[in-house]
Amino acid sequence: MSHEVPVLEAQPRERLGSRYTKRLRALGQMPAVIYGHGGAVVSVAVNEKLILSSLRRGLHVFEVKLADKSETCLVKELQFGWMGDNVIHVDFSRVNLDEVVTVSVSLNFIGTPESAKRPGSVLTHDISELQVRCKVRDIPESIRIDLTHMPGDIFTVAELKMDAGVTAVSNPHAALARVVVVLEEAAGEAAATAVVAAAPEVLTAKKEEGAADGAGDAKKPAEKKK
Image 1 (cartoon, rainbow, N blue to C red):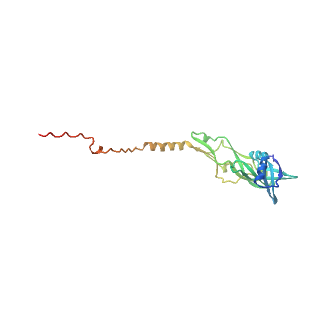
Image 2: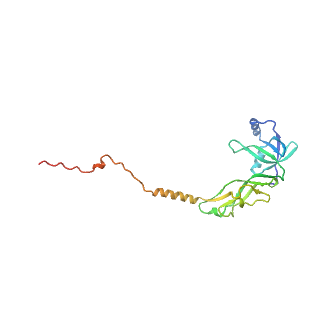
Image 3: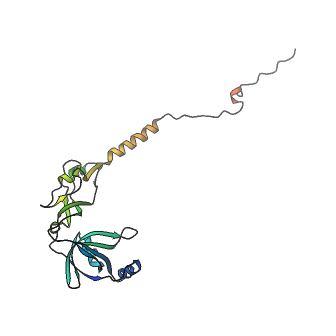
């Protein structure tokens, strides 16, 4: 986790409902709730610009200040708009820095493996986030994966080296990145096309009426009467 823990100034929300939350967002505020650790559920509003910029940086933990009280909170869930491309609500869970939690951390891929430099090869990233388990104070902003020396064509979760105290929850055999040779696929398609092209063409011709019954034979001259 970054040493910087952003402080979010929160204001209580006395009114709820979609109409009121739309007004909040129009004023640059993000609706949110705080819960957990045996405390009451509190509906608040926080600065939209600050929370969104922090989320883009991969931050998970915030000091949420409400009135004269400050609480360490973990982003537990994000709610998106109907198009799925904008955050419209944040759920905060109260935590302490030594609490062990499971969170999704973004993956930052760098480098190109030697196997991806072969003709027709393409490097693909199977997933963009990885679930990890660690203390709140140890949550990384992102996980850096250097693929420069990637052995073979597949890089799995088991091959990932993470900081002490951070453990991957995902299947160790799951692929994070792989090299796919598309040249072979293209060759297979070309071969299939060649087979079709090489197949003998069957022609059928409709005979005109009378053509098969001697229409092309010369008429015999009439015999002369003696």
